[in-house]
Structures are given as structure tokens and as C-alpha cells.
Length: 204
Image 1 (cartoon, rainbow, N blue to C red):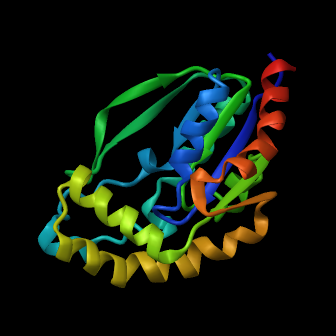
Image 2 (cartoon, one colour; image 1 turned 180 degrees about the horizontal axis):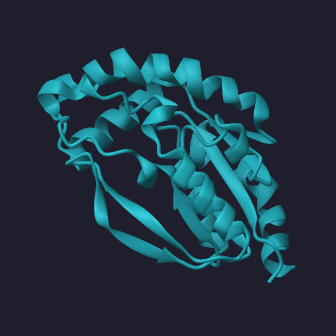
């Protein structure tokens, strides 16, 4: 198999990155999905009462070296053991998932364009640009429903870390994007622009 191609989908928390991946999956089935969220460092001591004790919205919260090495391995047609993360207990699990390389690899996360050597592995960079209020509402609903957070903890974390982190570390990386998708993952016309490129990778 030829060297795999990596598509990177970046954007702020709640921007609709995962929705774009799901929309791609409706058309293209045969790809590897790598969520950057799986590579967070463990912070088991964090709970609703001390939610700001660890900054999940700083690039250093990610095990970037592991992410880089595993993306590089996949691109070179090598099997990886992808980590799994528990966002209720804020810890990396002992279990991993075996991932075999495919022609198309999609990596998604808020910091994937921040570090140059990770960025340089990506063949097509897509930035999902969604208004702040929409992103906050989506994050609020997700964190309360899926991660056991309280309203107060979500708001505290957003004001102290999420919002400033977005403008310091995420928004500036939009300049590296090859394609900018306004209004998130429901912008089907924008998604239709890069679908042919992805199909060409699969069919090549």
C-alpha cells in the first residue's frame, strides 16, 4: 500500500468537528479515525469541585509525542495501539485499541495544527469555524450529559481556561488551514468541496 494520507480536522471545542467526521462516514466508510481527545494526559484528581486544577485547554495537556509517533507510524503503514481516555474520571485507560493503517486517516482535535511536526504530517488541513455562543452551548450540554459535570463547573472551566485557551492556541492556527468550514459540521456545501479529494485517496 502507498503511504497513507492524513486529513486533519481542527477547530474550537464544540465547533462540530466530530459531526463532520460522521458526515464523511456516510459517504466514505474505509478510513481510520484518530481523535486527539484519546491522547490527553491523566488528571484523576480533577472533579467538579476543582475543575480548574488541570488545564485541558492548553496544548501541553496532550501527549503530543505519542500522537505524533502514532500518526507517523500509521502514515508509514504500521499498526498502532491507540490509547483510550475516560473523561468522567479524567484518566487514560490501561486498555488500548489496535488500529491498522488504511489509505485515509482522519485526525480530529483542537490542537492538531498547533505543533509543527504534527501539522507537517497532515496532507489536508480543515478548520471548523463556529461562533462562540454555539460552541459554548454544545459544550455545556455535552459535559453535563456525557461527562457528569455540573453547570457551575462547566462555566468556571469555560471562563478560566476554554475561552482564553481558544483565542491563544486554537483560533490562531486557522491560518494553516487549506479549507475553512463556516458554521460547523452541518455545512454540507463546504463538506462537498473536499469529499472528492477524500474519494481520490481511497480509489488511488
